[in-house]
Image (cartoon, rainbow, N blue to C red; front, side, top):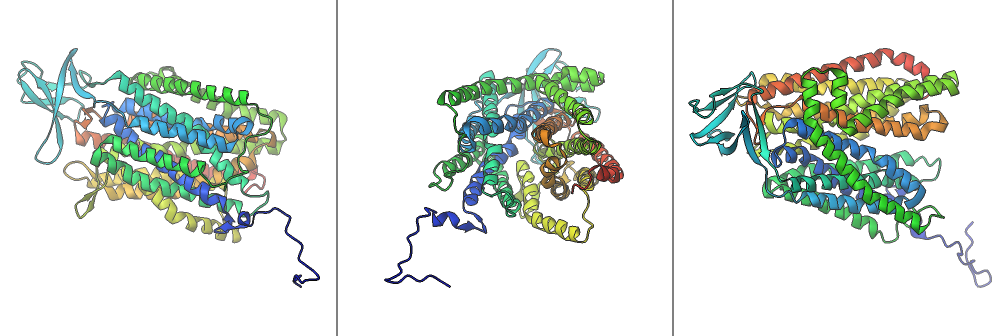
Length: 604
């Protein structure tokens, strides 16, 4: 019965001070989710747009060889996944999630702006017998860029041979031999050290800024829901959809802007995206009041120390990136010379040594610790967690080649024609992954529910095994497609589309359950540590992805491939090796999955 107010019985005034607007929803979720969704969408617009450009920018503007490009790209992306461990901890203890997100947004925006300034493009050189020659570029009748060595006796077009040697067409041997064997020449470039430092400093800003932004906006999404609110998982699904929507837009547009107006325009576009993310978050109209606030009792002096630490972290990141760039050639040479695993590890940059050492200590030490302090069941569950972390490293290593080796393959060895005279930019090919995720995520979410109702849902180890097999099959699809390469040794883009389709299905099998798996299997007192190990594994996967890009190195002069046939064969050999390896590991995981399921003791 409704209490209707009358003159004798006036309705009591509402003194609850509850804002009715706070109770409104957005697609059945708290209204604040809309602001966090759009902020994350624009931030990911910036990051993935930058990632679509980075490897090509290093190879074509600074004219780094593939070993240096792969090493620097891997170091950068590994740091991007490592710094959130520190950013999340600082937010929890000192700054709060909201201020951390704002700080990270400003720093990342400055990093993207810094990438707009690359100075003058590096000038290619050809070095033989300690003599250095300039290199000139021209476009032949087929539209292919041809590089020529400039000598006093004339210009000699460079043509690569299957054995790795090069032929200098037109040379009579008076200045340079007509054929120069592999190892007797090298491509180099004149680069301005100042602009290289600016580029590294800009990447260091992105690394540090991402460490504060990425973990803490996700934390704020979690605070929108009370404990036990069943909308939480669906809210995170909506939130992560913003990531994919943002990445689709930028991975298509940023390479186009770079192609139309220059590299600066592509990076300026992603800086604008990052600026929009900051504006949306900073001027939220009070929608986020009370969420992500700093913890009480933290002094201004303590916060000042944090900001001083941030300023000091930027040159540290610069140093690690610079060290990775300078050490890339030595590590690649150690691997190529067959120096053995110890020789290779000794030649690794500091970041590589640290990541490998920390990960090795974690995967060996944690199970030993669990065996000593935990029950038999806890020990077995921890072993399963560690095995799945290692398997995730294998998956993400190959999956994250999208921004490095696969982008270079798309540029050099792929016919990107879409028909009707439209040619897709190499960096834009990465957009197929988020497109497939957006299209297929609802189907897979429903599929797991339907299978669970019938008690036939695959176990977590089986899902991981499926993901590994699919990521391997993706590379084998491209290997098969190479049999149909055109006369210029370019593979049809449809084969890359199929690769991204298989990789995206694999991602949907593994990614959504990874963090949840860690929280369910870990001993309660070290859940935080295990979450750190998960992100450490993801960081190492990106680093190892850079190493694989180094192994897929092809000979270039002035950023142009000297022998398209040899380049395609190099990529095919690498893709075949990693594809078969992933499938073998996936099958092995599938075979031991019944044992792992028993050791999970009912965790699903």
